[in-house]
Length: 83
Image (cartoon, rainbow, N blue to C red):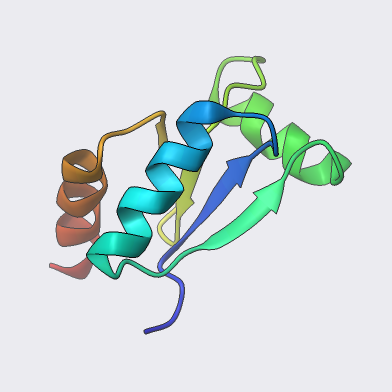
């Protein structure tokens, strides 16, 4: 399965690690980008979060974004995009 969204994260973020593990267990494909090593990615996250660099931030193919979502929220968002 190809990536269906991009997860913006940092290496030290516990919420990011937890969500990444849950998504992998569910078989949900995604691309991960470290905002500390990619300035453009940090700007994307700040734009999606009112200027804050809050992670994990997920950005979907349709341009929508979720910040620190549950797996259920990710699945619901994917369902609306696939519909």
